[in-house]
Image (cartoon, rainbow, N blue to C red):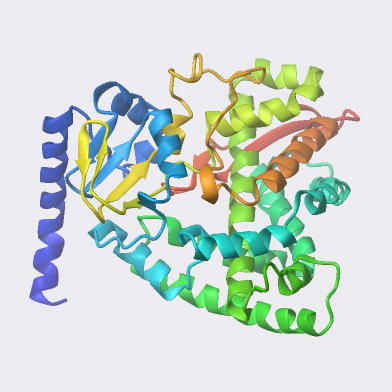
Length: 428
């Protein structure tokens, strides 16, 4: 190791601690997004930020973090002042920025007019009627996954159910063999890490390798569908046309990558986080069991209570006043979706899980032009998942291991969720 690298590695912890001390002196609270206790439970930190410094400037990241619901909502809607095209140079964003630069950006990281054209074309292939037609297939897939745990009364819900259901569904939509589900899951998990600010250089290299492998997998499928369209998502993307515009080969690949990764991760986290929340509130789980018609409302509450997506990032297009802070052009702003969904000015008793809640305007799937394209599919998959779990098991409780969250900041989801069940016919 070079002397300069040794000096940097020795000085970095001192520099970081000094910045955190400065942050605490200035605002009375520190937002350390890499702290394991924050990753395990971010909501106490969100509460402290809301009470002491809701427009919080971080000297370490040079970012303004925004907590109030109304402001988060406004930022996500206002693409003219808050751009999704990120050009971060902060040290903790270097690996993430390299990932975005080397992977052709999806419409998630584009602004109009590029975003408008891509979204319009993809909307033609990913329509609500197409999604609605999949309910029976989703239900059959959910049952088949639980059939695989057979008579077991203890299993990891993430590994055996929540991780696999979205992958199998999107594989069916795309029109590729479900036998490749484990490979799809591996690609998806690694590529999705590109959204995280704690991405390491080793993970970046692996991410790029996996993205290249996924592109190689999709390439012949796309060409095959151009020659002979079928009734699948790839064919609908290939033939989608609006105002004389179509998706190029690269744009089709990038869109498939986005749908595979985003569609998988969001639904997996919704099912896992949601069931964990219900197990922590057994009276709510029992109410849901007794009144299954509450499931759609319960899903909205679970999205609010422990959001699958916690953080977003926007770049300021111009100098902008944000609360009591002045943001400089090209600096980054972090709207905290997870904090906005616990805002007491919008939600009564926000830290309480209530599946009968009527004020369900959560921001879990974003707002504005970047509102999650796959939100209807995620809601449908979650609805079916909870219906099937309650149908199959008379009792669901925590299993042997404590639930553990993955070391993510942007996408909040469980590494494992062990459950102990009693089967409907008395087994277990």
